[in-house]
Amino acid sequence: MNGRNVIVIGGGAAGMLSALFALQRGAKVTLLEKNEKLGKKVYITGKGRCNCTNVCDTEDFLREVPRNPRFLYRALKLLDPEGFLALLNDLGCPTKVERGRRAFPVSDHASDVTRALEKGILRLGGEIRFHAEVKRILQADGRAQGVEMQNGEILRAGAVIVCTGGLSYPSTGSTGDGYQFAREAGHSIAPCRPSLTGLETKEAWPAQLQGLTMKNICLTARSCGKIIYSEQGELLFTHYGLSGPLAISCSAHLPDDLHSDVTLDLKPGLTPEQLKDRLERELKASGKKQLATVLQTLLPMRFAALLPQIIGIDGKTPCSQTDSAARQKICLSLKALPLTVSGIRDYSEAIVTRGGVAVKEINPGTMESKLLPGLYFAGEVMDVDAHTGGYNLQIAWSTGALAGQSAAEAALSDEETGA
Image (cartoon, rainbow, N blue to C red):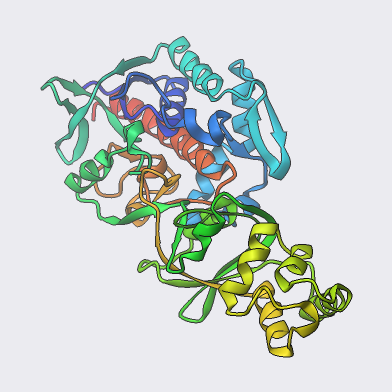
């Protein structure tokens, strides 16, 4: 067995960091990427700008991770957001921090992040193979000992790191290969579904507002009567329902059956009493004007025209003739407009995959499989995902770094002992 050799399957964010950190620990590394270039998914993050991390402390970071956050503690201790930015700067890719602590390359080009990491790997003597698809992980003597390629080639190694991503954006090569590798090693897979994606609604009226973005509103989601998500921010109405930062983040909190009720507080800056007083003043001052026209003082024009229809009142009613029941309906709808989530968008639109290799079967201190020594996991292939804002990429960087360092140290130790 080639004890010093470490094989990394997948050249995305986690794979590049795994290779880099394994090389830094003195291992010989072969990085296998089935695409024609590294970091294909990294290229599309942050709308092509690469929101590469979020500069916050560990506790704040973990609060942005809905599933299995404590599993990441050791990985973040090894490589936190500031540490990753320092690494990028050392590799010749200067960075900047913008609103919401979101970090980007100064150039605003995601390709510069991937290029810097690739150069770092090559500078340390790493081997990168493109169009290299793995068929299976080789097992012998109760441990991982290399891989068999789709073309039948056998590559021996002291450690194998699976960094194949999940199922989101399949056009980038994320087709779930890692789940099969994990199953063949005895691992269980937490049920997978798209996450950080748009919400489809039972109601059809959002389609009439398609393209309308609203800022500073509050979205609250409930399941079985319990609040599962409530945040203030930006929302986009679409032909299928809701998108934008609020809806996308909300999707990460939905129950497995996806069923939940959503309410939109369109005026979170006003209490119900303040809103009622303001509406009364607007109606009183508007006299013969139609109700829908006056609602434009509270909502964008398209929404103001549609709201009466949504809540079942006549928008053409003169303000002076608007009765108390209609006024109450308006106030209630502005503070808690109801919608029903009927589904979510598919993997082609999802930023990440929820689910994956069960983390209870992975050592959080090394990222090594508890079931098959010599096998490691990093990144989205595992059952860990976070909100938008650079957190998911940082999870990939950090777990990749820990897996690479651990795999190299174990492989070198095995070589020295002759294991």
